[in-house]
Length: 388
Image (tube, rainbow, N blue to C red; front, side, top):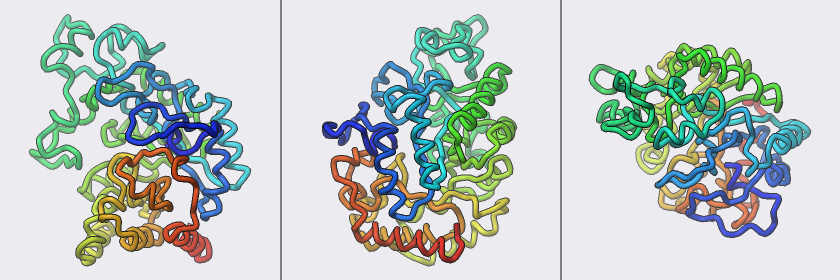
């Protein structure tokens, strides 16, 4: 998480339990690339760098995390702008590492009325709102009336079915796929990929991102909420590895998305690791067996992890037991798939913090810990035995 990992400003204030911008940036990350490389990692994934909305959301604060785009073709100046992102890409490649960028093609930032629509530029700011999905919009109803009215835009998290959120399943009677794909993610306006202008805008943008910043791969946020036919075009336009965020426990549904993207984040397995390693290990065997029979195109391209920015860190889930964290990490590092380690996992003060998005600089960059030494050993073993 770029805003929370490192900064070029040595005098940053505390960054704990806040929804404000904290000051992390690309140049700060560059200074810590050797720290990451010394643990044996050969790639980094940064949260979305595009320009975020300048207004606040009543509950969720600012767009410091990167998932609230205002304009896709600009790079946010909070993080260092396009020049800073290019410096980061060049620095990553100078260390013979790969550069992965998080992107969102499902939605933009929070929209609470027609006045917010007008704050976007170009295709995204059209007054009529045809660039966004507007299920249930009445004939002659303005975009402002639709957004502010009752019931307003369908919510993919609450209106697609009681059994949907957060681990979706499109089996009969469980989830309405139409609402999942065309409803809004909370108050985040849902992009209408069937609109020719929106489709072209997103496809041109992902080509530009890849070529302008020498991106080696993308992580696609909220991929489950995007129509499959658009995912096909998006993958082709990117021309590099894409790992999609597909949050479901259903292996059949999960594997379907690898028909359209290079890879998917392995939520059916990884979201249960906390309970498995704190309980019955036979459950892990059952998970792996079910995964192997699910019909994935290539299980080696699934992203596997113990925790991420969207929930409690693993160490908190297991009551601070570092031994359980080490066991889970060993499984992740030596399993089929692409292992992903969230920033600060090597530092128990960060990994055990109640705030899963805490400012890393407050606790220091120390990999000479039990977990840090394990990660170095696991990365070394992966390279020695050709695991990636």
